[in-house]
Length: 170
Image (cartoon, rainbow, N blue to C red; front, side, top):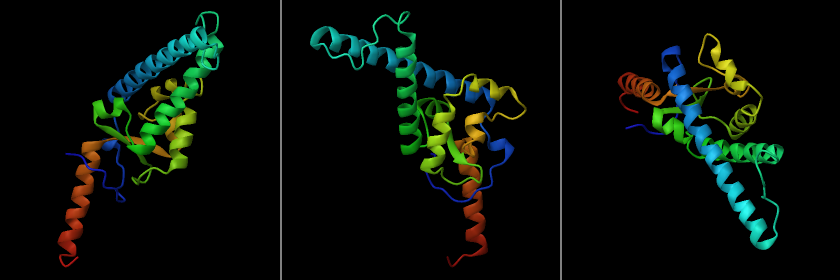
């Protein structure tokens, strides 16, 4: 069972989440963000129709694409920022057994998560995963990586076991 123990474990290439897992993460999290956007839009339209409050009203999505995209961007920042700050994992990462770590294997800082989240808003950022390694701009700019949690935890246990063997008294 994975834990949230963090030590300084060197991240190796075989720990990186492969493109398939990254794609599932992207797909699942994107679907959730779009569903949230539609639900908030429906709520906003209802609030407008019922109470005249138009702060969240989108209206017709085809006509108000800018409002929809702005709302979606804000909700995406909140969604990714909240999940990755609290648990280092989005729903997609829970499904694929992956999590976010810094380049050096340590727990990401709030600043790194913030930049990682904002970089996702760069148009066509997803195309950056077509390179040699399964690492995108939002990883590189924030100095973070997405690793297979089981490979990461195995390396951490191995490191801790070797520490205990080399220093049995503590």
